[in-house]
Length: 303
Image (cartoon, rainbow, N blue to C red; front, side):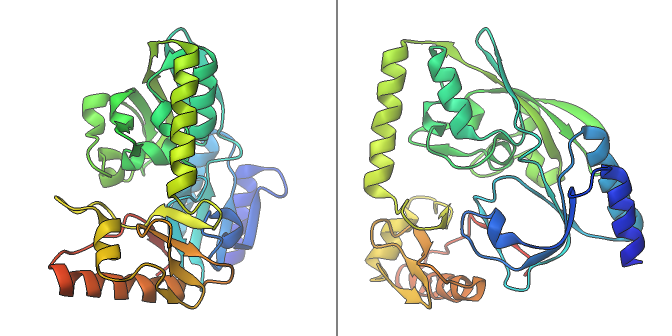
């Protein structure tokens, strides 16, 4: 059955090298942590993507859509299913007037810099977010007062059954780290963003200001998955962790960043279990001391 399924994937994708087996996922996540994926696919077209989904359903294989891997923790055992990476082959960006069309695998950083060069404002907040456009829509990514919902006009998505839908801003139901895309398990194909004309120098100055703020406050020198916890209503996760006396707390090579307590960093050889144990301890301590439940923002895969 395994060989038959693998052959089916290769038949769909056509070119050798587009289907990998036992691919180490630590190579594809910003945490640099994770065991192997049973199958790792790099589709190039919507037709190939839909065919992979159909094959997964037919053979009973689980699948996960991966972009730049910037918000995920993969287990040490890896993922016993199909990783479908929409990154390398899905990164086209084009600008028409004040409208940005970006495929799901396009990096937000690249998109922000492209529109800045055109004197378009609205995407400055995303200039330091390491994820892809698709991932940003799934979780309504935001930073420094801006969110995807502020600029998205519509998105083209694929359902689990391979049906293509075009969703308006309202239909995307973008909220704090949530969307209809996440709830319905849609796959983002393309996002359409509405931007405004602005002063190019002012836009670039704002992006430089945000870059300096990130460099000064975030542990960018270490592998991580960004902000580890969602913001509890009425609180800041990082401050709660700091006030709980957990700044610098370590389990193996996983550590609460001393620079920003909202980040768990990989000091070099951290395992997924190190991270899980650290996160569990942090949640217990914050709950015990402040009665606040910290919910993970980072997605867990393979656990």
